[in-house]
Image (cartoon, rainbow, N blue to C red; front, top):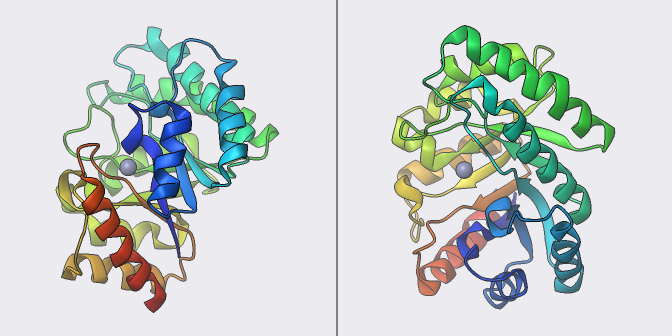
Length: 256
Ligand SMILES: [Zn+2]
């Protein structure tokens, strides 16, 4: 398993300082979160690419910009966010993009279905395939506006957008703990996990070995998971706690 840090935690910094801070903390791998981009111009992606190439960091994954649409008229916005995220992943050489369902949990089942079809089957999936990027669907928390917090909801989404079972799963441990679905998700998607968002509830850092943490890591190991463990932490987390968390995971991941 490879330790990585989501750069969303430093999204208030400009991209240069964002990468510099990550390097000062001693991380070599990142998940690039689209929150850290100013979205005014599509061509900004070249600025991110330049800063990234100069940084020497390795971008293992990219977290798509997301827009949980509440009305079908907004479909084009979700498609735009998805495509510009894929363009950015291509520029940074990231092989995997984490996506949300992009539909609000308030939509009716039929409307959700037609929106999912339009966003993913007609646009995002063919585009990702053309540029050779794998998509990975993330489980959400109960307090998210989006749809997809447990196996039942994720299956409803995957039935429409991934009938052949080709998409990966981004397992967000924080969301799974909050929603109490850790084992349910592991049992159903253990073999499909290709990215992990790592944090305790409320995106607080794990700074010490906790039973729920080692239980989860052991389960990943049993599924032969060798992908990223992406620390996805609340932006108020102190530098000291980030360093403590990194030290803990440097030790823990040697055991797997
Ligand atoms: Zn997450």
